[in-house]
Amino acid sequence: MTKNSSTTKPDHSIVADYNGYDYKKIFWEDGKRDYEDLADRMAIQKLLPLHMDSFVDIAGGYGRLADEYLGRAKKCTIFDYSKTELADAKKKYGDKISTKAGDIYDLPFKDGSFDGLMMIRATHHFKDMPKVIEELYRILKPGGIAVIEVANKKTLPKMFRYWFKKSSVNPFDKNPSKIDGLTMYNYHPKYIEDLFKKQGFRIKKVLSVSNFRSKTLKNTFSTKFLGKMENVAQPLLAPVRFAPSIYYKLEKPEEE
Ligand SMILES: C[S@@+](CC[C@H](N)C(=O)[O-])C[C@H]1O[C@@H](n2cnc3c(N)ncnc32)[C@H](O)[C@@H]1O
Image (cartoon, rainbow, N blue to C red):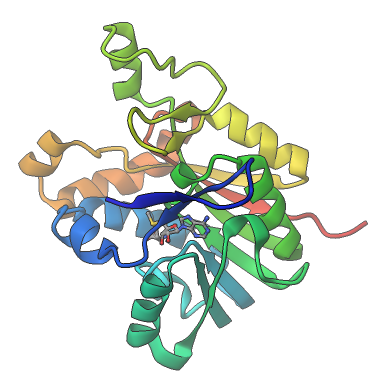
């Protein structure tokens, strides 16, 4: 599990420190998450522009998803807090990728540095999403595209847990929820979408992702079969926003 440590910034001081944590092996390989990995890739393939000059994978870790953007951008960067994750990315991709370490709340990039970015499986670590969204918007060029995955608090299992009094977290309440016992957060789609719009982003497309994230389903059906179902479900179920991962394609408008 990741460790959490405080920094000097009081409002958004939680850093999920992956330094020294073997995220690839422990979470992805030992955790048998082939289906979730496939679901992420399918969504990215649907949303990320085909041709970009400069692109950054925010909180990109060891570059799990680098194959999805390397062929689409002339210059690719992975940004992450964890230097050990970035070292693994560098080991695998060498000169094909630049890496930059830092904290999401204070991105070490100038305004308008990128014409594309993505941030996948990271929002659950961030307490201050308004600040995160402000930073992402700042580093994009006008006309740039952001693909952002959000950990959803309004999923069907969470609804059932609430209705059957197994959890006190109301998934219909728009405010962010903290995962019991962990410094991790889930977000209501409406809360996040209001933030995107308030910041100035245009929501271009939404996908419902990891729709079949269930041990029973994964033990019963092959990844290939679930992948086929997932491919259809991603756009089909987007309007209800019940999946654990909601993907957004956002545009920073051109200056008027
Ligand atoms: C669950 S991993 C996701 C990695 C990658 N996006 C993926 O989908 O495989 C979350 C990542 O967020 C990074 N992270 C956590 N807190 C951060 C912060 N405050 N600033 C920058 N990166 C952070 C971690 O180091 C980790 O690599």
